[in-house]
Image (cartoon, rainbow, N blue to C red; front, top):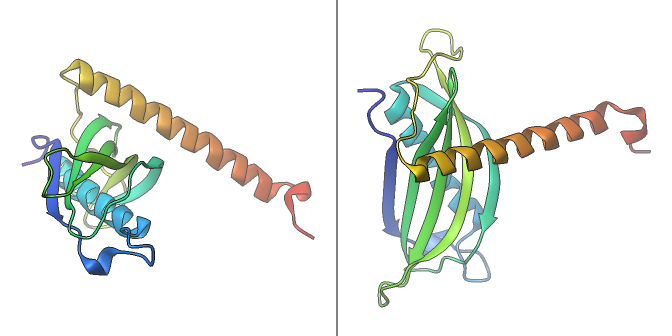
Amino acid sequence: MSGQQHVLEFRFLAEPTDVNFGGKVHGGAVLKWIDQAAYACAVAWSGKYCVTAAMGGIQFVAPILIGDFVHVRCRLVHTGRSSMNLVVDVRARDLRLTEDRLATQCVLTFVALDAPDGKPTPVPAWTPKTDEDRALARYAEKVMEAHRRIDEEVSDLRESPSGASS
């Protein structure tokens, strides 16, 4: 049922196939986990097929190692007409220890699409209920606004004759 579940969590162990030559989990593997959790959260909220529209504010804070217990937590923090902003935190911990650590965090925007023609379709409105919800919604809006400004500048560079390479 749409409009009910606004938080989704994945938990698993980091596997040897997830690591790079330095022995740490690939950033690409972490981004895949983030995208999967955010997709599941967006679909659970909207009740529709959803696609990733943007990812911003990505911070790789601490490495994830083979055998670490990984916790990917995704929270819906803002809705537009057909879009949803989600904040994702990835935490990791050595199972021999009790303290976990923030490994990665970011904000994603997903858009819900209708089935027959793949056009954006309305999503249930999200209303922040706690101070933390409201703070995360403001954070997500700031990250995505910065992302939009960067996109505009890159687009201007591509279109500008002086931005052309020789």
